[in-house]
Length: 116
Length: 113
Image (cartoon, rainbow over all chains, first blue to last red; front, side, top):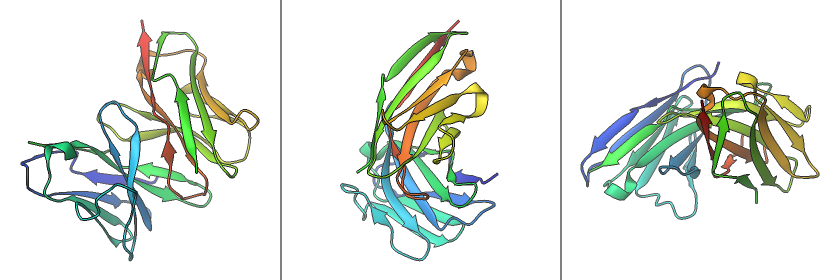
């Protein structure tokens, strides 16, 4: 089945540094990637939508200069948290939609970011 | 705008008992509805989905859900809970195939031996 590989699974970084999270679609082309953020014991909140070859669309309240999203190819989308602060600590999950007969969404395994 | 409400942030059931998780949605168009399960520090696994075919949808691990348009509901059930069912469950809606998913607040299921 369709797989989205997300890396790293866990990362600890110091305040002020940047962290890049990658999501790769392994056996299908992901023209769109949704990026979600999940705080402990809470639901998933959509941060932004990336589309291959165009600028990402950010949800209201999400700082586009802080959360840089790049969709470089049909199989790779990245989220870079720039100048990270402790309040950016969260669980980040990517998801690629699949249309057609097997319509659905494939989720990455998530990245636990801890900023110290 | 679409939205999803899951009644009960926590549900506790005994092993072997019925599991019932409630989900109500609002959507301006016939929706696509999903139930996902999440284990700690993991991504989401699809349990089942409704895409305007049969209103009673069967999923993995013995779960099923019934789409009731008149009630705008998509409740998830499992006849007999297993210890491995202890997890967080999310109901989600999409108004267009391939468009963004909107998630409910989640329901954490605890299974007592």
